[in-house]
Length: 103
Image 1 (cartoon, rainbow, N blue to C red):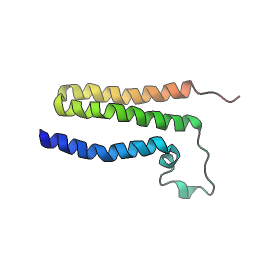
Image 2 (cartoon, one colour):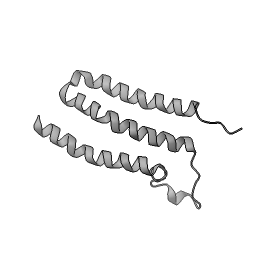
Image 3 (cartoon, rainbow, N blue to C red):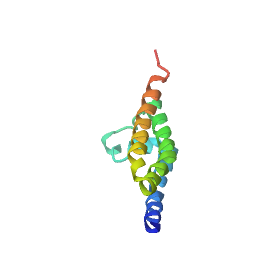
Image 4 (tube, helix red, strand yellow):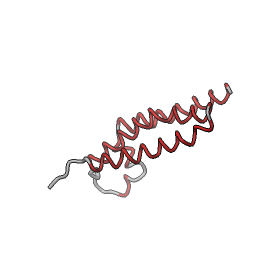
């Protein structure tokens, strides 16, 4: 059990590094590997940037809960994973529907 917790912590470090990078510079995350397709710097929607930032914070908060559920309560893991996935989807819909529309 201690080895599983140790490996989980070791694998969470790069995940958190990626999520912190996604929060601090969402434009770089969205254009990762795609910059060569554009001659000029593409303009990203502020809604997409806001979604990436909020999804990274949401993932930073709920990913330890999902992993702890996997380690300690395997029966609860499925429910925790579904809450995580539906939470990200509902958050995306909320951001899209509450966006300020330019008319």
